[in-house]
Length: 294
Image 1: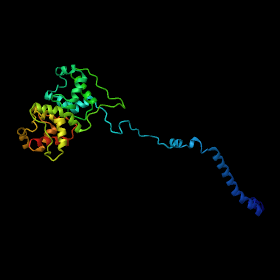
Image 2: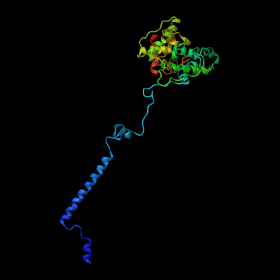
Image 3: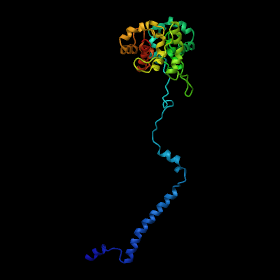
Image 4: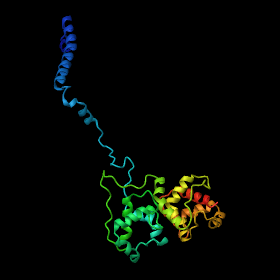
């Protein structure tokens, strides 16, 4: 029994030569296998193939999702607003109540004679200004297409059947409003001068601002939004340069004048009817007019 168990656990390596052969094979066989596998891999992958081009690699590693910015959004391009949006923001100050003889929205009789002239004629009047209405309703930032849309909307609410103009096609140049407030002031200066001349007064010049603000800015805002009434004293507006008319108002203090101009009073709509004006711009215009009354 003991001899049989001893034979079962006897190693097959019986000589030193056999031991050396086993050790050598233990190193040689794995190396040979690895070499064969490396050879197979190198033969199946061709580094010069299109799969390894820069374009192919970039395509494989590109992100799953991409952020797409629509044309015009990156440069802050402003989409043309609808007629109703323009009317609510700019035109309603006068046309909702009929102040300063503006034809009231919905008054078919008041609009009938205007509608007969056609949309193009009405739009040109609105762009250039007419009688007591300043150019572009007092908002020089409005584009021609926006003015046309506003006119069409008001007229359609008052008996017309104008088609609201479509926005320009993508890439097509759109007629824009004056580039800045100074250009807008020059655009409005002629009507304001004519109104002042009719009342026997000379157009005001930029004097130092009463509140220490920007006098040039104040005059620019005045020319574009305030001169239509204050140049000739329309609807009880204190005429610019009329010290007697301004005296009781100056006694209230400049802060009270600011609030009146910002919120509106009597026939004067808030911000002179131009709701796009910043509060600082309205105050600059008040400072300019106050400076002319001292």
